[in-house]
Length: 417
Image 1 (cartoon, rainbow, N blue to C red):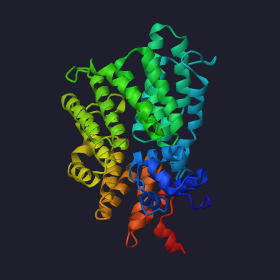
Image 2: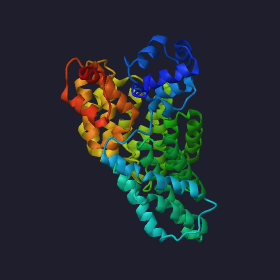
Image 3: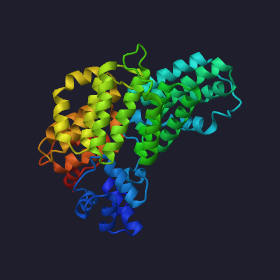
Image 4: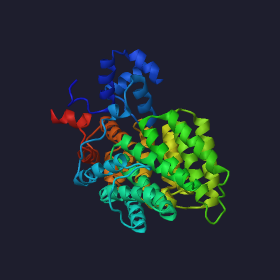
């Protein structure tokens, strides 16, 4: 198999498995799936609809998740290319600066830098990644300077802004497939929050860190981060307080804990965390500190994603689709709305072809809402290929999705011969 053929997760898994000298039986057993199912995955007869399955197979094969997903992908459009051009500056900032030592460089006033960090976070939430990343590396470097060399008040302001800047940077590069860099940025934001001693900021930063670690397949570390953060923030989380940021952070940590449990197939634990998040959200109402969008609508959206991960997709998609107008209105950002439509599409796809028309429609909507984020999501790319493979006739929307994603589906490849 050459590089031209190894474009899918299954095909890459086959290459890795053979180079490791592993049989289908051994690899499948280690991943917790059957030999026949792994064979179908490798030959493109089944798709990777669950993120946890990718993690399990990477662990079984002794490779990284990126080895299987092929990330980062070549940019399929100008917006993605422009966003990727900002990554080197962000990477330089986190590599060249620490919370103990910084370069000798001038820094703009901390109030100005805090505004720029907040603006970058808003752009990232709206999936405007080129705008989010523009000048963000310099902003992060200069915030480090203030956090190390400033007086007490300046240091505290710089650390708080650095947390938000790192959340924005981590979210941006994660959407572009730079998972290891996203984890490094999230860790820096977490360290800044801990140094500041703000429980709410530490909770939000821990949630961002856990999100990047889950994408790496680092489940042990994810569990440790989430467990420690929940212990630290839950005792002081009052959802009825005027400033209920701690409760919002606790709720997001429960959602992330439910995600981890679902990736590991622990359905009861996932449901317990979702229930705890829902109880907090009922009391806080719809909030949006640091653009995490905690509230009843986001709990419903996460419940959908976790239901898909637990292979309850059709039922989860049915509930979300019935409540879509309310959820879409409450989740005002492009990031959250695109995830909502993508997860509905994933849920319908688990109906094994019976609801593929609706899956195509929602996947198309997700791509139109947030094209850069959706096209760089390995599960979304696999879903395009799965839907294309199952199509019994030519579907214009599928052809368009294949072109937009820069992938060549089985049917389209067959038609080209």
